[in-house]
Image (tube, rainbow, N blue to C red; front, side, top):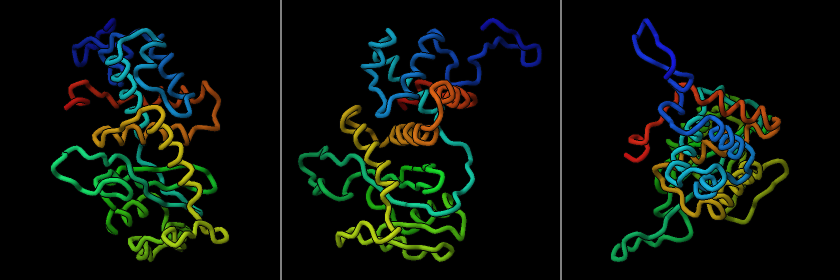
Length: 253
């Protein structure tokens, strides 16, 4: 804390007001962690990061979540043009042996994530939608927040999407084995889900509902800057460090 502010009469440093505030990890290790997270297609587990930068696993876990906090999107403009919308599900393992809830295939006991992908810009939005199948109100609210009225929206055949009156809406019936009908499909957003699911199975093995939005933000952020060079990707992460402090107490609360 080498600097003194005469207005607020307190010490500060370049870390103040960022997710790096009060961190004792050297800047060089933070830079290496940012590089690894910005260039890893399927992210990196905290155990692996700890080995690579020479910190403990709890420290690496805390660092990764703070960097994911930096990927939290700002208030974004709604997408224009053709937009694909779909949902996917995470978790669902039975925790109570005496209270079976038929977990397995389907959304029972799982956490929903709703996403949209612009076919023209390849930009992605995604939010955690709660446990079980999202209702029509939740799905309509997401679509209205992600796509400009008048845009063409492609979805699956779920009944919840049938009342998108202010959009040009087309769907495919996945329940009947229909996945593509001309230019009507959701393959773009489904390919994004496949990347996230491969990381879930191969890198993390478990994603708690409590922290799921941060993991989703990480992959959305990486997808949206994938065409940039390495230094530009790292710069995009650094730009998000400001004003998004995450304390350990908040993280584990």
